[in-house]
Length: 280
Image (spheres, rainbow, N blue to C red):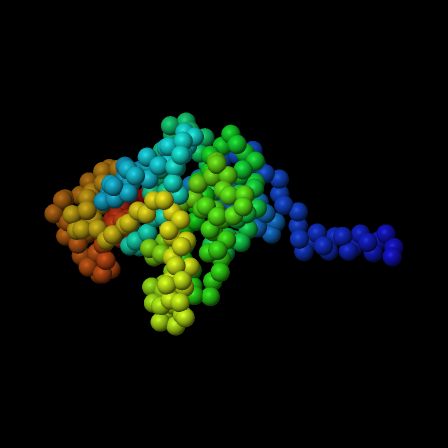
């Protein structure tokens, strides 16, 4: 076999399985996105987030997650957290907001987002983060859920408290989901109905959520909280409008959407700001 042939084979193998990118210094950004093929951490120059003070109606979850995050960022013991519940109520926004608060206090906390489809590579990511002991990392899995034939949830167990090597001391996991157990409810019910030992089958499915030390529930907001969110946005962006007109338009907007949430409040405010010539 000639040298030219060997070179072509080597180049082809490199394209099929590119070498992982070197680990960043973590000095260029406070947040990264984990990508594979090849493995790399891509810095995020500007994180899309809301100020902590503007998150209304989730006071208990906010205070609990912030305290847990600051403990971890300062090098103390802290729990992995599962933020579950109603859509649009600020689960993802809260994770990004508490990270920003920790950074604002001068703490060496880095946010790393991992997509659900990349969970099978989480072991390689943990090895990389574990080699940066001067930083503390929040591994963020957003909108996490699993279907009946999905086995990737087993990869996540190693991040929480499973596996021989375990999770590096400088890494913690925050996940958000609309489902309390990360699995469809009918899937768990079906396991009870069809399994020879239904208890064992269900335990396998819910054991992932049980590994989170903190469960923070998010529930649909009341009308007063919804209106408070909108008034908060108006104050933050100095948008002046008659209170009665604001109330009437906001209630009409949520009625057309059939729901009240932080997301609906922001969507209404975006429309209101545009109609009043305000750029966000």
